[in-house]
Structure formats: structure tokens, C-alpha cells
Image (cartoon, rainbow, N blue to C red; front, top):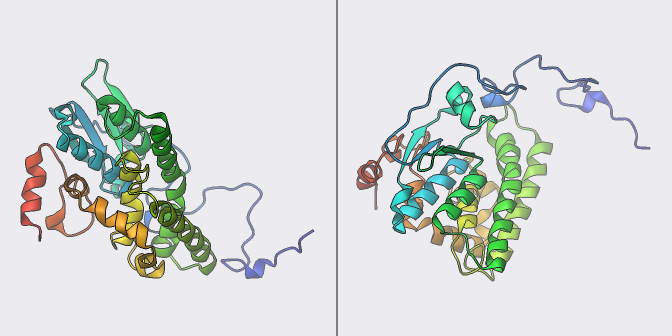
Length: 297
């Protein structure tokens, strides 16, 4: 039997977990004002509805970028039915707990989408589910070949299961926690380095995540892991994790990042970065065009 831990060595010193946890004080560092242990709406707020078939309620985080990149890729591929309105959900202000948003996604997480091209309209939440829904609806970016489809779905599910260690684990303790905890940072840095090695090893023999085909798996993984490598997420993380050592991974990051639709999609609903490089709401291609025209080449 392992020796009992000395509470004096805990953080804070003397802390001992209670037998039953109770919500007695704010927690979550920068996000303490919106964290709570219950679900459901906190206020009544109807969501706006634009003129296009697809209504997206989101924020330009990695999870939000997955969907706007997919929609821009669909439009670039000639799928006019993928025209969409993208409404910004400010999660820092608790917009995700409004009654209209909760009616679409009871889990109160972005992104959430409603497809009004069918009657009754279909609601979809969870970024991976939205990517699959759109891929199947338009017959694009999800191969029909069983082996390639299985590879795409496997890597998509890899991202959904792995990214929480990158974001909620490493990112939180490296950037957002109210104080630095060496144990937590080291634990999650170890896992993220392992994940980057998984990607680098796979991409040594594959152009994209599912082989030669660019798919929803690439769209899902790139905003998270590419964002870190490019310095777009968690300031200092690229250097701390030495992402430059993963040559095959960085080749893929650059190739996917050079796609016009990726560059367009990552601007939509942005809440961070230079003000002149944000498209808070997207209702037509012109909204993105106007911002792109002002950006450096």
C-alpha cells in the first residue's frame, strides 16, 4: 500500500479533497465567471436568424474554425447550398447560456448550427458532428471508399479525444490558470508532445491525415495543432513545446494553412487577434473579402 501523502505538500499547502465536492468558490482562472457545475439557460435570449439555409452560432476558437473552414471549403468547391450566416457567440460574456443557444445545444458549447434547408429544421452541435453532417449533406470531404472513410473518421475522432488534453489540459495550465503548477504543465506538455509525434510520424508517409485526400479530418486537426505551431494559440507554447522539430507535421501545417478557404474560415467570428483581421459576423462572402483586402499579403 502506498504511503499516505503529506497534505503539507499539496497545493495549496494543507489541502485535502473533501469526501463530497461542493461548489463553494469560483474556479477556472480566467474563465471562473462562466464556470458552473450545472447546465441549462441562465437568461432568456432569442438567437438571430439570417437569410441563408445554414445558421451558425459560434466563436472563432479552434472548434469554431473547424466549421467555418468547412463551410468556406464547400463554397469554394461550388456547393452554393452551403451559404451561411455566422453569428458570434461571446462565451466570455455567457452568450452560450442564453435560452436560444441552449435550445440548440443543451451542452452550451460552441459551435452550434441549424440547417433551415429542410423542414423541420435540423439542429446540430459538437464540431465533429457538424463536420460529418455537412460532409454527408454535400457529399464532400468525406471519402466514399470504405478504407479512406474509416481513416478519415478515425482521425476525426482522434482529434475530438486528443484536443482536450491540448486545450483544457496544457493550454489551461500553461496560460489561463491563476498560477503556474509545474506538475500540471509537465503532465500535459508530455501528452501534447506525444500527440505531436503521432502526427509527425503519420504525416511522414501521408500528405493529409487520410492519405492523399484532404478531408474533414484535416479541417478538425489543423485549427488546434496548426494553431499552436503557428503561434496563434497559447502565447509561447510553440517555443515551449519545440514544435519546430516536427518537420512532417510543419509541412502539413503550411500546406493546409495556405488554402484560401482555410484562410477565410479562420477569420470568421474571431474574438482575438488584430481588430482589422476579424470578421465578427459573416452573412456573405463580401464580409470576409473586405477584411482580406486590408490584410498584408
